[in-house]
Length: 353
Ligand SMILES: *[C@@H]1O[C@H](CO)[C@@H](O)[C@H](O)[C@H]1NC(C)=O
View 1 (cartoon, rainbow, N blue to C red):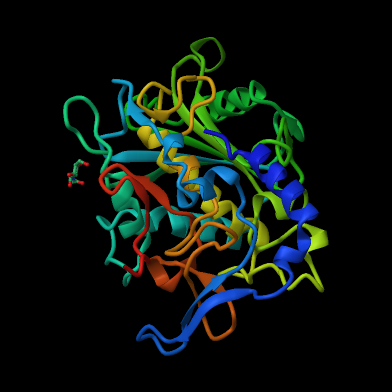
View 2 (view 1 turned 120 degrees about the horizontal axis):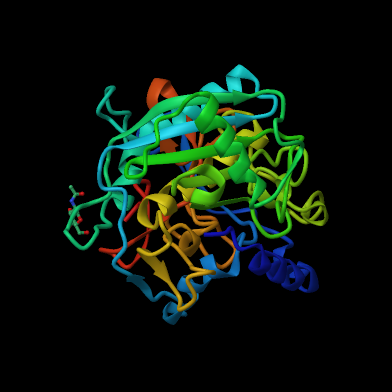
């Protein structure tokens, strides 16, 4: 449910105490061309974002006890209601919408492989108790622009529901219990309770007492100015890992550290809200208030050979921009992998094996 930063900080503490370990090689298995002659595959050596992500590769699979708890998943075509909170540049909105619209291929021609819609295939492997799979159809069904920061520039887990209530009433958005995801995206100048310190995004459902209905929602913030080294990783890395350490940030696929970083967090939250919309379906661990979900299990992994200091094999274009998925209108994105219930491992369409 959360982006588990505690593990990240734990890792940083380790990394700091053994910085010699990270002193040289920045990549592994660099070899040219996978048929696309302006691209090559590389596997950057960066500390993993979370210990949970690297665990699997170090044999601690007892951590992964993903179970189905009998609740619903989003098995009907999914409608996304976007709430833009604060000041957003149209180009940034277009980039995020292109990502979301790349998931489904019902409304446009499929992008070449490895594509965003192939990435969502892993999510669609999750089913509910009737055998219904998570839908592969995702539409943006409404947008609300809250330019005037209707609930201020600091939000909490509770006031985010006021933001949704305002949007649902004033748009008006459909009240879409069964098929809707209300996605709140906050601008760089909006702070959020626990943002940067413990979370980069989260999902939950609204309370009838606050919004009038129980609606699954997710929140993701633009970390570009507040904490890119935490929430827009690996496009920014902590300062002490900079020059001289041999570890540098990767160039983002669309040259927007904050928004390119958000896209992987949006992907993570959409996968989790779809497989656990009322927090009673797919998660690991015994505690439903702190569940480990299908995105959490693969945080920091973007390709084959990830773990133990590597993010996995991803692609680089001739300008050095890093990506692992292709989307509509020629877009490229770098998105973390998702836990596959079939493979019992993290999976993505850019896998090399
Ligand atoms: C539905 O999920 C099952 C179980 O994971 C999988 O075998 C099947 O291929 C999925 N079907 C679709 C249409 O995704």
